[in-house]
Length: 125
Length: 125
Image (cartoon, rainbow over all chains, first blue to last red; front, side):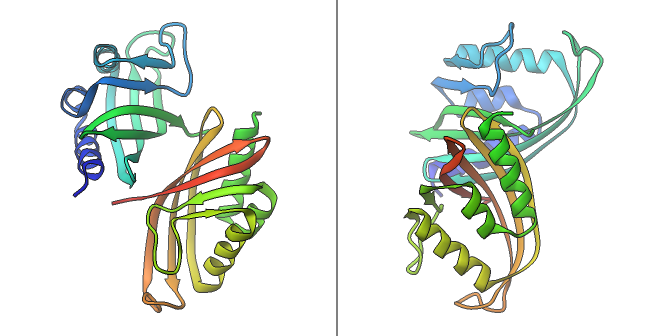
C-alpha cells in the first residue's frame, strides 16, 4: 500500500470518529501548510506549521457541537488524495452561535515522506 | 460570479445530463491537459489537447451504457474546483464488457480565461 493511500485511509477513519486532533498529531508534518477557500477577520486562509494547525483544530473542537461527520474517500492520485466531507454542526460561539450548519466540502491533501504536508479546502457552492 | 464558479456550475449541469462531449466542446481550452489516476495499455494517463480529449469522450460515450450519473459540486477554491462523480455504467467492450461498474471518483479542474485548462481524476479506494 502506498504512503498516500495509507495516510488517506487513516485520515478518513479518524475524521469519521471526530478525532481531528489525533489526525493532526499522528499524520501531519511539522511543516504542514493549510489553506482554506476563504479567509475571515479571525482566521487567515493560509496557515503554516503544526502549532497553527493544532490551534485551528482546538478552535474547531471547542466551538462546534458535531451532530454527524461523514468522510468519503480517500480518492488518491500519485502523492495527493481527496476526501469529501459533510459535517452537521452547531456553532457554539461567534456570529453563527446557536446556528446549525451543514459544511459540505472537499479537501485536497499532499503527502511527503508518509506525512501530510499540504491541505486545501474546497466548499460546495 | 467568478469564472471558476460559473464554469464549474455549467460542467456539473452538463455531466448530470450525460452531455460530456458538450461540456468538452463548450468549456474546455484547446490546450486542455487531462490526467487520469492510472494509465492502461490502451489509454495513457496524461492526454493533451482538445482533439485527444474529444477522442476520449467519444470512446467513453460509445463504450459505456450509463445507468445513472451523479455529479456533486462544484467545490471552488481560487482558480480550481472539485467535482465528485458517481457513474453507474455497463461496459460495452474490452475486458470489462458486460460488467456493471460503479465509478466513484473526484476530479480537480483548473480554469484560466474562462476555460478548463487542466483536469485530474482521483478514484475512491
